[in-house]
Image (cartoon, rainbow, N blue to C red; front, side, top):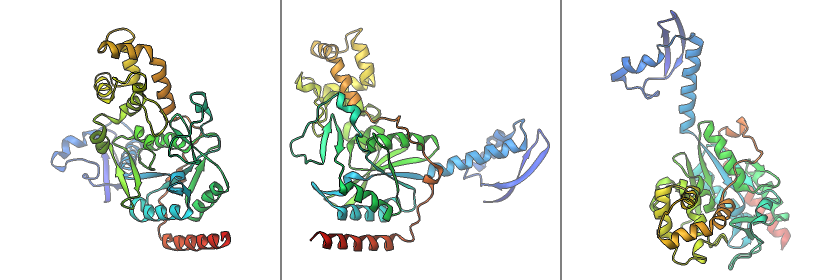
Amino acid sequence: MGEAAIVSAHVGITTTTTAPCLATLGINQRTKPKALKLWKLRAPAADLSRALTQIIEKKRRRRRRVFFLDVNPLCYKGSTPSLLSFAHWISLFFSQVSLADPVIAVIDGERGNEYRRQFYLPTSQKGETSRKVLFGGHIMRSFSTFAVMVKKQCTVFLLLVVKIEGHAADDVVATLVDEVLRRGYRAVIASPDKDFKQLISEDVQIVMPLHKSDNWSFYTIKHYKAQYHCDPSSDLSLRSIVGDEVDGVPGIQHLVPSFGRKTTLKLLRKHGSLENLLNAAAVRTVGKPYVQDTLTKHADYLRRNYEVLSLRRDVDVRLQENWLSERETCNDSVILTKFSKLLDETQNLNQ
């Protein structure tokens, strides 16, 4: 990249600015005359320079990732609250995953799932601990002194922490992911929560902590299609029909046992979404008699599941420009050592 002259033949003005090489702009040098017709516009040189700058910035941002760290699930070893577990996963995350990319840590706000109470009464699932009280698929995590400690430890790691009262972390993440994409970045969500799969696209990935192999693993749109044999855009519709046993959302098979995953996938491939499917079933036959009867009789039930499982994207939070700054990595080892000593001191006080 060097100094280059950009000439507007129509206005007769030559401006000198820093311009990228043709390859950087995606222009094939063998077809340079044809490709450069883009710049033969009747516009002031300042406008041409601004347009060039916007293209360069968009391409630069496309290569950059913004990570969203779902803090709460990392703070437990099994069912036991553990700051040591949090430190372990954060250490691996910084050294192997995020590197210098921006990281935004998100914590659940108190009463984060209040609006979901209208759909389901609190349900304690078999095998779940007191830290998970489920309201139709979304974790209502308890708040205690431990939660306050976790937030303090995030600051030790120099993490930007976002906590919005009255909103769950996954809804905050979903809202911010949309804004990050609008600004031309890619998004990576660090979380074991499968609810985030509904956000997966070419520009949105998930990275999950794998306890058995003790590492983080990326989960992309290719992984999703291989696992579910459908597009991620149908994820909400699929789970709304077949249900989510782990998250406490009963599927339609509890009411109609013969209405299973195979039937659901076939219908979604044809109609695209639950709403399209229900609308079609309301005016014409879309399948066998039991399918038709189920979709018309239990439409409200399925729409309720969809509402409960859907991540909200209307949280009142605004992405700040400084949140997108590269993370300083030079002091990571010092910070981790400091945190380890702090853990030892805390454990000694509790003994």
